[in-house]
Image (cartoon, rainbow, N blue to C red; front, side, top):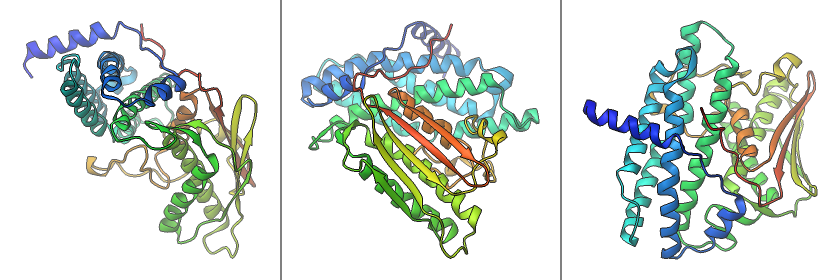
Length: 365
């Protein structure tokens, strides 16, 4: 890219970063996703053509001005280049006016989604690079707040792109794009249990049993892939804790309990284990990124980076903070309570109100 082209791109980033990001509600996404006609897809493409560059511009601006030298870490530079490339791809496309334009636009955002698959792992490497450069174990609160904003924005961008792409893939009964009108928490729990047990068996050759209790016949409107991501992380953590606390040669590992409960406002899923718990000093650090009770993985080459939905058994320290962001994206939350020496209980709260707006990072000034 020439110097003039780079300056022009930078000017466009600065211009679009002045605009507010427009939040949408789960109900809006669901209602719009029910109609996958060409006309509606064209309307959606026009909205995304205007909205996605604004969201990318906010993140590029922030990636440019991070504290403590984080912006200059090699892996963070890689992430920024990804965002710039995606921003350029979008602004070089004219606003879709025809169905052919819409198809081309959809191909472009699908490529963008694929390009950003490994951003979580690459940014994790960048934070490790900074930690090594500074010789410090703790992350400054300013950096933790940036990571919360950055990953929440990433969830929103991927949700909007994924929803549009899913509307192209033919209608599924009960679905509007990625959103299921009658999502069964118990069914998603069972799927997450199977995935977590397979991973646990791969690492330890044994895996604890998991019992599912409570309102197992409950159904609500939600994004099953988001719910699976959160439940898989919680169940995987519990399995690892139980096996490591009691030993892989234990004759009978304690059963992990998953309870589904229904309230007027929230649906709550509790995951409880007898995996020894977390110390009081450690419980406040589980949301800080890079904190993990496992040995962290080495700084792997880019070919070994994994996406949000292909996490290792343990080691990055990103699982819980990002799961909490997924919960908060549509107004929920994730809490963890521990009894050191006994076990841990995680409470996943999910909003029942379909009008809950997506949470967006605060506008930067």
